[in-house]
Length: 395
Ligand SMILES: [Zn+2]
Image 1: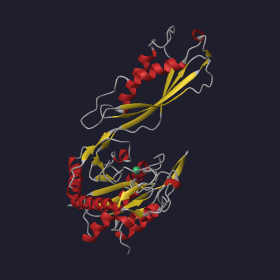
Image 2: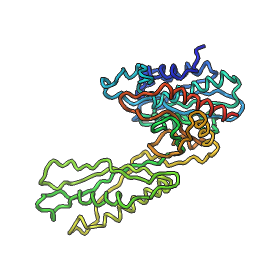
Image 3: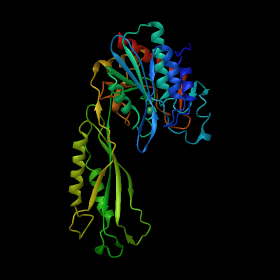
Image 4: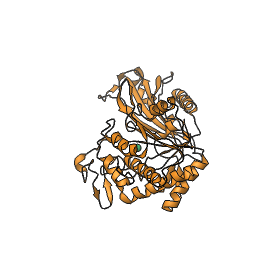
């Protein structure tokens, strides 16, 4: 039986699999090979949906008598980018100066490698580990996230699975291992505003209705005033206009339409519904302002379309779980981690509907970059944190 207690070996095997989203690339097989000898039963459901690639996922469970702990993560990775710019080939898992290089090293094959090693070490010390552990691993986190964790949890629940707590192994630390736990995430929603004008000659604006004037008026109302000042657990809600499009090649023509798309990251001051209502309200009021549209009496003729994929804001309130993870980190690293809700969304947004969830993994500095890499010392430290967390969780 091959030992999976070494996170460095585990990670080298995972990096060697070119699992660029949505390809499985051998990565789930590698995990299955590590977990089966540890007593896990492993299933690999494939999910499909029209218009998206089929994606393979992995659910592995080792049953015991006690609470059920979930570890969640993803084996898919983002593309390597400029391959010749890498110091070593991106799937070679070469070690240079105490760091292992490779796409997915920190985001987040490294987290999986460490958790597997931690479980293997726990079992080596105490083969009758109290309680159940499952791995919820998707190949669709870096892609559309449609055939991944959300469906995998539904699938497992339909089989009768339920969990008491979950830990996600995404890279949560900005600079040093032990810096930061994620205990919630901001919500995210996006929309596109289309303003319909009347095309005409730039020298005869009274005969036209320039949609750019209307669009600027509307966008201004979304950028000021601020939505809130932030809350105890979250930074202030922020809206970014991500593109403005007119597509007009002529300088002497007033265009017909203009569009703007925005993305908003919001805190727990808002729900999806109250925030959408606020944005509609701002746009409606702004549409009747005429400062930038002198001589026009009718309101700006606009349409707002929300993008489909909304992420809800959430905050984990399980003080015991947060405390357990914080003290495991402090005991191993000497650092008391900051509790944070910063950054983008993660698959924790799906898990929070099933059980309390916290996130802790490696240092994220090089994620998605050329020369993504992880300190070998961090792999050992994170394995020790996870091992401590598992044994304290089941104690
Ligand atoms: Zn990730």
